[in-house]
Every structure is written in structure tokens, then in C-alpha cells.
Image 1 (cartoon, one colour):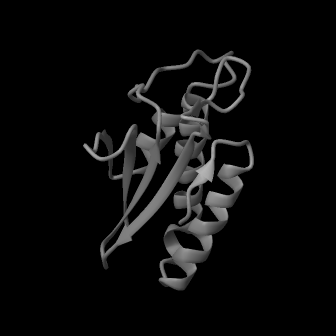
Image 2 (cartoon, one colour):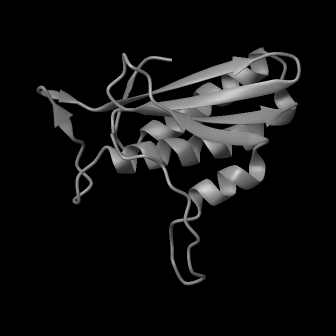
Length: 133
């Protein structure tokens, strides 16, 4: 998938990409879960890549971007969301009256495994999720 600017429209584009790719791969049983997980990770990546007012962060005159990569074999799907933010993901337990803060908890509940990694040739990080067929 091409890089997407850290804009509010990016999660919808990513959900469409995930749905179409998994349909093409005949992995339709994972579509709903993969869309939800991808949307959560993309939203987190966008929040990590914007300022306090929600405006995209620019580096070297360029808007920060996110990338999504899907990898699959017959038994699992690995979904990666790459962002340019240095902050590492941390799951937290939101109170019942909070409107946000449950994304990574939800990701953990829906996935077989998840984590993050740093690549030496990438400015930020990758958060990945493994879903089982």
C-alpha cells in the first residue's frame, strides 16, 4: 500500500485496502477482525503522529505518513502498521467513563499475538498483529 498522510481519512482507506486484499486472498473469515484491528492501529499511529491540536507533524517539510503491510500464509495473517513517531505503544486500562484508551486492549483480545519493532532504516516504529485463520 502507498504511504498515507496522517489524516483522519487514513483509517477508512486502510479498512478498504484490508477488506479488498483479504477478499482477493480468499481469507474472508478474517475480514471483519482485520479491519477493526487495522483501524485501531492506524488511529493510534495517526494520534502518535499529530500535535496537541490534531495537526499532522511535519519533518523536513514533509507530512508524516503511515504504511500498512499484510503478510499471509495458509494459517495466519500478519498486519503491520508503520508510523514515523518515536513513542512506543503501551496498552492501558481505561476507566469505564473514558471515551478512549481501549484500542490496544481490544487488539490484544482479538489477536493471537501482537507487538512492535524498530527497523534501522525507518524513522519510527512498526506495530504488528498476528491473526489466525
